[in-house]
Image (cartoon, rainbow, N blue to C red; front, top):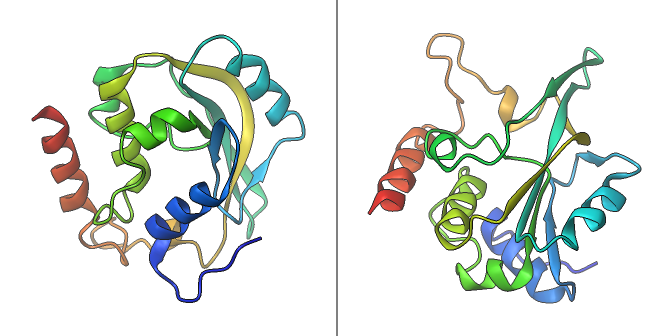
Length: 174
């Protein structure tokens, strides 16, 4: 376990974590979420097939109610990806590709995973979808995804998220 001396945000923490790691593959998961017991087996099974990016289905679990909702994803579609980040979790990327796209970029906070997936799609089409729920996304009362303004139906703490996402898609098309 490594600790940064100061909180420099999710982008810097992730990039530094990757720098400190040694594997050929990087799995992106949130600190308060959960991998299913067989997740790494399914990932390893797919990783030997010559792909560059692997993603799985996920379950969105509300800790306060105990309700779980499956997020069953489509196969890889660059066109659909250009409209929204349907990949999200569990995302696993070949290290050399992650480094080739320049890691996570500062200024994309809140949409850093979408930015990464868009940039990965510019360099490879070797995406693999494992149609199994291998990731449990815990939605806690304090989770950023729960801070919805009832009037606007937008995230309260990420007022610039729409603009950031719009900018990322525009940059992708350039």
